Length: 614
Image (cartoon, rainbow, N blue to C red; front, side):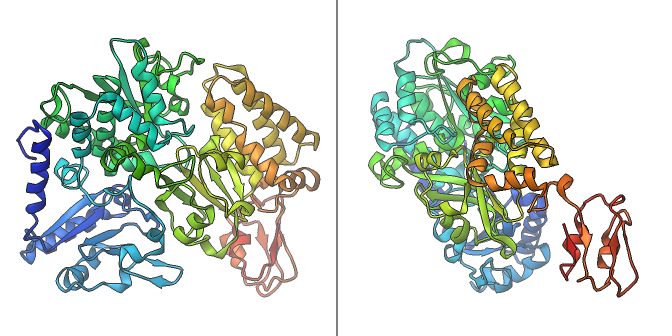
């Protein structure tokens, strides 16, 4: 890292020019995802590239860069070769020699490694369906820089917008631009970020604080983690602007301890920023001081709620408090505190760089900019997706995600995690933004998007999310503590076939009271998965209760496996049965001993003749 301190806006602009000019002799860059892909062997691939490039005396001309998430997690481990923009998936160390020979030496793609989508083979990243409809603003550096090198971030414009803003604009000008941009908090509630900043700035107090909420706890969500792992400097830059605008000298990044790579990268980034004079005393030679501390949470879901997070930061048990006063008025240590999540802060440099009008030109009337989604579940191309607000669910699932896995039918999408709801197929063409999603009985949440097919039991999905919420309830208020427990008991009885139809009315009755009377957002939104599935899939609830049947074959207590006359006696089911419950002679119809059967479903899955029913 360069030793020279940044003492002015001119200094950082000159540093960027020097860094850009330093690549004149570069032949190519090999970008390798080293976050999620690390678990699938990316480290060995990177080592092999370095070894082979050194043996060919190309190590000074070709940089091997260990990056954050490139996006398409389903193709992991992925390698992107610049400047050709060839994207390869499922790369193994034995593929490296061919990539160097064909792509780096000749500029030609290795088609057998090219990422495919719906039968189309395209080596170039921009031509792959997964990326075509995305608009990467917040994620523009993820997968393009080494997050452990501040020079990479500065080379791509990092910190320049922040230093320019605090050098040339007043605190109120920055806040006014934030309000004009229409940026809404990306943590779930969607409250206007600039309005929150303004409230904190105008609150009385000699000390003020900034908190970055990185306590991402929704099942299936990894947007904040990916940003901290892949581009931590963008988050720091956003916090720096916020601190200047509200008058804070200290900030915190409250991150889950289960995110070790994110914690490592953010700490490295903070040290590097301090070393260059971009954090600490008299930032960039200005009369402005601000620093950031990392605090790790123990993984309590409730600590994603602002007041519970503050309690945890102060060393108390993370439990929510009633509001008002709001944290912007009385937060950390009783002082005015501004809290935004990771993605919200990562949007700030874009607004400072391009202006509020440019930012608000993207998105819908009431939801501006882009939104990052963690696309997971029964879709072909899972991964990290950034799209303009207002993109339809169909575009995300089919155009970007490549459609349903194994050719099955789309049934629903769970949006907003355990506090969200299930959006059924009839709403596939609805635009996705804060207000439209709420009208469908879900919430945007932090951006977890779990796609489900026809083999998903919606009653079981509601039970799963309510079980999660009930386990994570802090227990402070009775509606959440006792109400969600009672709702969970009813759902469990439905899944066992032991419920009555009148229990559905009781579920709705309880849900209404829990939403109205719970202290914090966790309890207020806890019934959403139940209410949304009851609204769109009530027939499944009725079937579980009246017919004692789970059509999806998920609720084991309602299953009874049987082998019918279509059986050819191939004995495939016998070979996979773990408890030897299946008997029969070869080429004759088999039978299942129901007393021995553990309802694992392996016989059903393996039968090619549809001779096993349930």
